[in-house]
Image (cartoon, rainbow, N blue to C red):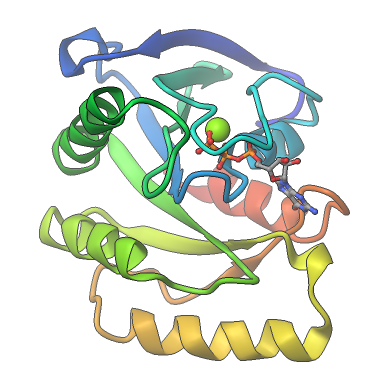
Length: 195
Ligand code: GTP
Ligand code: MG
């Protein structure tokens, strides 16, 4: 599903610009710089279908990709610190929240958490929003290549206890690295299995 047939569709800056809600979609949410766009590239096997950067705040629109004609993949702007003017950042944040709480065809939100940092208060806030909107979310830990196995286990424990408070959380946590490819086939299979 994800390799070979993914195309960029459009960048959206307001809720009325969303494409027709005619198929299921999954989105990738998380703090700025956590690796959302890199993960989309890794999942689709395309080097730069989604634009990435070392500067937090690279993705500034809701970017839609089509995967065949059955799914949309949605790359979101990050939350938390971003190198962009405050009024602009506030506009994305409003759009992000409206999207996460108001998209009927959103089948699952992948909530990316940097494995070095674990769940931060802003992540917990987004979890609460998803939970209140009854959107199933699944945590994807990113940048696993930067940590030892022991440090990975420590983060996993912290994330598990943060998730215990949220009934909308899907219990399986996926550990990934867009750099090494670890966990990417697992996540591809999870997305392909959604109906
Ligand atoms: P915004 O769009 O700004 O919110 O960021 P983003 O979450 O889309 O992050 P992006 O994919 O642009 O990646 C941010 C930085 O992290 C880039 O410099 C990436 O190369 C790096 N990065 C992303 N994933 C990984 C990973 O798995 N391992 C390592 N080592 N670096 C990564
Ligand atoms: Mg991005």
